[in-house]
Image (cartoon, rainbow, N blue to C red):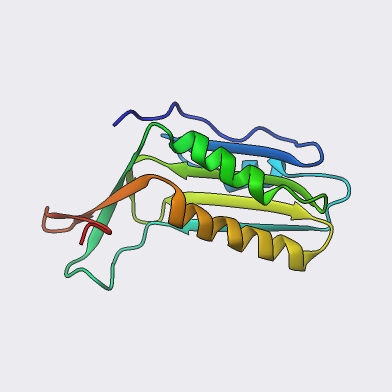
Length: 155
């Protein structure tokens, strides 16, 4: 699978700005928050999905995740983020997903959404995260402490 080039969302954004990246480098939460900055923003909701040391469906300790992305993943992520921003009340959206090998504690996905008020920011952020999880063609392989691995969602 082709890996996307390393990228981070730029800062700061203008009204309705959308920035996305499929990245091979560490995701920076502060850069995502800066990317959705806007003078009208009274709220910025963020989500950070990070690698954990366990999976309730797998026996053994998880020590790493390896993410692979389909070549169209960047386009899909851009489309999903643009749809989330398709509301005049949404001032900015930044969303990135990692590829490659990540260790426990590293962020795998970061989403930031700015709006004038918190309720909408939370709603749009959560909805975007759920759509990314459901639609983004990115797959993960869990690496266990004993050296074995498990593809997530392959059963």
